[in-house]
Length: 504
Image 1 (tube, rainbow, N blue to C red):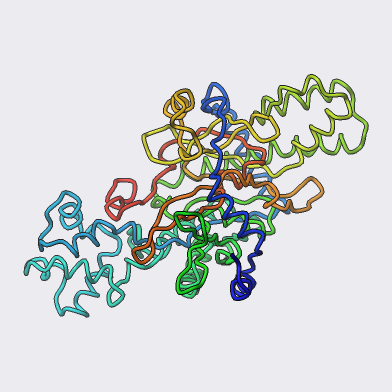
Image 2 (tube, rainbow, N blue to C red; image 1 turned 180 degrees about the vertical axis):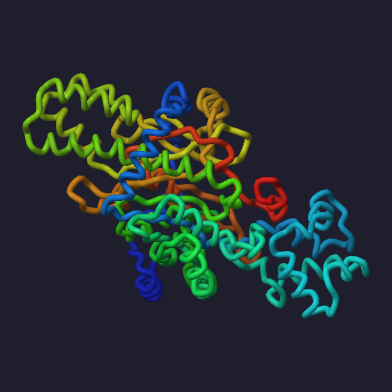
């Protein structure tokens, strides 16, 4: 099935024939559903810190930032914003010329409120010799949208979200990437340095670098910090092969077709980062300055919890490695693992002393993440659960609906009764107590990928996504869930979301 020319193609992408064979096998077998113990709630599995605890964790994080620790903010920013403008693309191709549905009417009725209005107005004057207002008065609504989306205009239909202007300020309209510059200065600075890392597509890297060149000095002056901003691209070696309906390799003009492996591929990019603590947050989940204080507070709380729990884990690991521990200390470790990290094993009571300590060491000596969770408001996407792992343990996991057997009434009820939603708000510790980096791909649960049905030039195909970055890719991490306020979750899925009060 794999020819000599295929082998050359694979070699250039850094993908082995064995990986392709395994992916094709997965198309045949599918991915198993995960067995649930239940949804994580504030009664079990989701921390809800008191005001006193919040103050203690804030102090813990401020003390950590004052030390000689490497902190970095990691922002997945490679996706194009085309889906954000889906409704406007539909308007361009519609058989009517004036705003007709509610979405179109809302867009044009509030067009002056968008942060990109001045740029769009200037582009309309440049290309059409008429302002937005004049184009609308002439009934040329589509001309306005064309100038917004097309490459001859602002090209917003093809740019990534990070380069779109989200918020208006007196002195300047900010892109969402710039809002992450600001956030970084407010909670991820150490020794006057803010380290930011954006994952970008090859097509947009130069534009991000241009933005940094233009705006970095302004924010350095504003916050009295120095920025170290880096970029990476999703590796070709993480692409996955496409398959026909019969699970044979999909080919275009005789060449194997590969597709990006989804955000789970970014575990490789994350693995290349050298930092003690890494914040992860999506590019579009930002707010203007007037609403930042609560976001900053809870980011610091999550980080304070992380370093607090990690400190205890490191103490336990040093104790285990010294060999000088008592029965009471082992009992304390078991309680910490089960109560603080919510990781349990029904077989633990049957383990011999030596096996028990080895088990504890294995569970403690892993990457750690603290994940903010908001109350469920009906958003599509994943949530916090207690799930069974391949080794028989039960632990906290962020699961998507595709990982749950919805034909199983009990599992479906657990999913539907979940009280919290995953807003992608993570703080991660990726080094062991000796300061050595964990090899993050080793902690991926390969059974948690996803198969979807797509088309290419009119031909149906099967596509495979790798285990999601905050789902299966971090499945074997120590995990803590923390309830955070809904105000910290403000994604922009459509352009009209920018008209919500939280973005004004």
